[in-house]
Amino acid sequence: MDDEYFGSDEVTRGYEYAKGQYVTLDENDFKKVPVRTGHAIDILCFVEAQEIDPVYYRDSYYLEPEELAAKPFTLLTQALQKTKRYAVAKVTFQRREHLCCLRPLNGILALHTMYYHDEILPWKQLVPPEQAVSSEEMDMASTLVKAMAKEFAPQEYRDEYRVALQGVIEAKIKGEEIKVPKAPKVEVMDLMAALKASVEVATRESAAKEKLRELAATKGQRKK
Image (tube, rainbow, N blue to C red):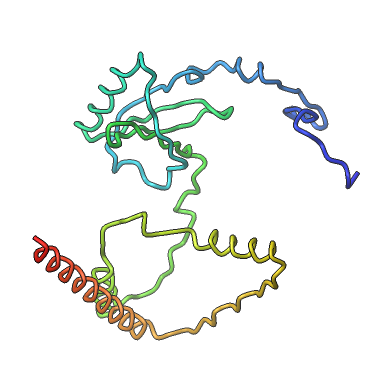
């Protein structure tokens, strides 16, 4: 049995309603599921964006209307933009009904699928650590946050693991030896010393970037 493989045409979907007893379902059965959201997005209400905790967000999709729905699509998009609200809705795809929200995004709508409330682990089950923080530590940590503050630029980040994995794949293709990287040595440092060192590095980097911006602006003025 270990060397046997089964194709998708040899697999059927089923539900175990009793021990060892199954009812099978085919594609037509899924199409007959009686939900209103099978062919349309059902808007339930409108909420303020900050009312939705990011922990509920799942996946993101872009929406564009069919030609006949262009007017209502545009109206909804602009109304959400004007009122600064999101639409909470339900939609069915991939054989399940998803809770979701719609938000305006540069003239189109973004749809974010969301977890249902009972799918989220209640945070009250977690116990935060009871650690006293001194005012000096808080001041230093706040200084570090301010020194490293910047506008979010997603294009600056990349999946380092994927890049490294690609390197491993290419090495295997070439028959090269793959060396396991050594795990970094973790040392327990004095918190204040670590914060001070981080602040110094962040401050130097921030000053260097500011100097580069000034030089770039100066060069731009000279060209004019």
